[in-house]
Image (cartoon, rainbow, N blue to C red; front, side, top):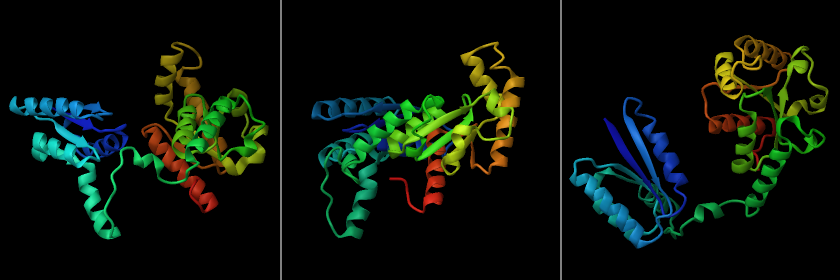
Amino acid sequence: MTTRVFILSDHTGITAGSIARALLAQFPHQSFELEEHPFLDSRDKVETIAREIERLGAAHQPPLVFSSFVNPEVRERLKAACGKRLFDIFEAFTPPLERLLGESASPVTGQLHGIGNAGSYTARIKALDYAMVHDDGSITKNYAKADVILIGVSRSGKTPTCLYLALHNGLQAANYPLVDEDLETTQLPAVLRDYRQKLVALTIDPKQLHRIRQQRRPGSRYASPEQCEWEVHQAENLFRKHHIPVIDTTAISIEEIAVHITAEIMGRTGAPPS
């Protein structure tokens, strides 16, 4: 049986959605159908969704509800509609924080985005531009400005990871694809040799790489199992020889890859990435 899950918010709902997914992942034998309802920023919108929850409850199909509303009146309305099936993010964490900090919270919708460095938005946009310009080794002359340079065979996850690092961490991330000419030797490509300390390698199971490439170029040499096996083998030999830290992207998300990379950068610099 599949349980419906509503993720409700008066803003983007990203926080509630992330927490909901993390918690529900602890129940692998359950089936969940997630429905996201962001920007419920008026009483009419909230009332509509509250009545739908009540209707489902009356039909013996009550959903689980994760919410991140800052307005106490809205939270009370949802509590009345959902009962014990409501998981209110602010209700769970705000009172203990108030007690520990000795100060009452001042709820403001969207306030999360104002926390931290006031220039972080500008930094993320600058980093995003850098990642797009320096995608797939298209431009290499500005590698000195990179916070990290990802290397790996084609379709190992370099581009989406660079974009994620830019948008969420403000990191200037370049990526360089290892092609056949690079893999026929165990030497680092010339354009990378001066930036050894910036390198992080991504690898992937050859069978998974074959499946990904087959979708892109079915039946091609590029997608053949033999080519995928050879490329991954040669790339991993190169990584080992030059002691480049390696992240296996086969079975982890972009978010997890990014966490590993930021931890690697922090280990090198002794400070969290800005």
